[in-house]
Image 1 (cartoon, rainbow, N blue to C red):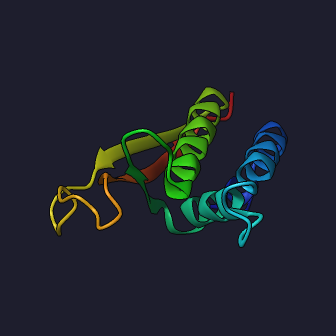
Image 2: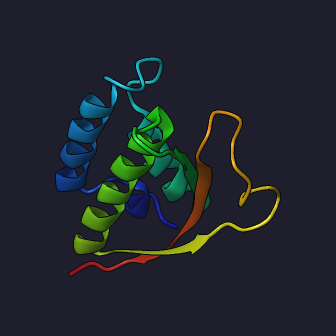
Image 3: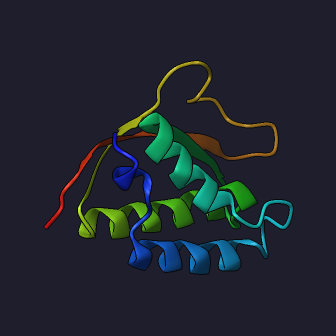
Length: 115
């Protein structure tokens, strides 16, 4: 990818910032978690994101997972071509110690449309 493609679209940058701000209630130790994931997607071409789903409440990792998926939907609308694939195996289908199940998805950046 070129340096131009490594720049986050301005509309997406502000969208990510609002998600990071909302997420900081549940994820106080990392105030730019979603932005860091998106930068990793741009630089490496792929990122794996997961969260623990539970009955009756939401784990902080699930809040981050949902916020990330909102950003992916917005990015796609802005021309980022992102594919996703559920991660299976390596104990992914097992219940976690805290209750619930771990869901993990690998996202790949296939390209960016310049409409």
